[in-house]
Length: 564
Image (cartoon, rainbow, N blue to C red):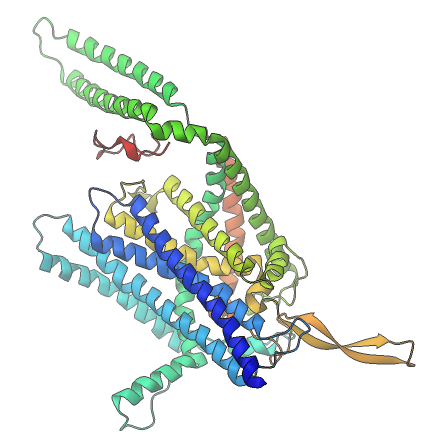
């Protein structure tokens, strides 16, 4: 009987992993289309394209593992709070280890991409811009700069190995969270000095399977997630307001822009004629007039080039097609702004709940149960009971963050303090800018997992798990009170042996100081969203030549890349 139950359980679990596999293929297809859409057609490079697609796909696949993790821990229990017949200690441990090793693999690949592969490819193409540099010199220079990133990665691991256990002495905090909330302790070494190389490798993996390795990887990933939080505050928060309002407002009329451009051309030509008229009698022009004439002639060339592009856009079939889809864009804009408001309200209520009812900053603002319910925290646990509805919703949330982040990056650009490094444009993004773009999106996607936790903490921690508590019930048939077990939703105050915490939560919340930083980052996210909403409302309609007019590398044969 136990064998049959275990077989049925395995079949159901395989379904969850199969859906994950199908989503993996969809992610690869999405990343390929997305990167190809933005990369420059004239400067496309195979290595940079593959690197961008691979790094973005790894981040999305890691996020896609979140609902699988939640489904697996929830599936081990019945809705009445009891464990299923097949869910003994060994099976539960095996399921948890499967997800854990999946996270180990994906997060290790992310570290490799962020600190080794992406920097190497970026600096390789930076050196390639110099025509006099040989390929061997390019590789050496790229390795030299990449070594700096490798040192940063090593320092993260070293600092983590030296951090001592924090003192969390506040009363009322569950032992389950105190037990695992320490920083790094050094990895052990084999006692037997005569161990073979294989035994040493095996011992290393066993150590990584313990809480030491979990904490080590968690510290590094949490550091990257913290950077992703800053990117989300900068780009995603603004994009959540800019994207829907731009869809609703649309772009300026191409015919009206052509009329304005024609008037500008006539005005510039009049200035040129006025200056040239001063030299009709053979007198040389003063130096000041020569400089002005040169500027006006350069301006005239730019305006005529703009005129040709505007004429092409006005007569293109794509403009007419987009005009026909204008009502649909307005509907999408209204939908996106409603989704943004839903996220903002849920995030505000969740943060307010932590501010009022958490255990404090030195616990990472842990809350016990949901004192202030928010819409997403109520919706996701309900959808999780019917797999894969929660999978679909999380996919929508992640894609929404990707599109809003992309909208923010396109509107703001990539900056280093006050210096603008790159502009992101469809079909015109250089290899270096493409790598920067995918690095930023990778870090934002990493932070998305914590954002989902902020929106629905109970769902991310326990899914739909319940546990049994003793409740006193007054019975008419028997004198006095009787005690009966009653199911209760799992929360941070639940017994350790009754509720299984997701591996995602252990990775994200191993260190209280990161959790505290995320908490304050959420308030900053809300503030930037409100500022971006005000700015987007005050700005007028975008030009059909938005982000193109001032580019010096525009050619006359490529007007079709402009968004309309």
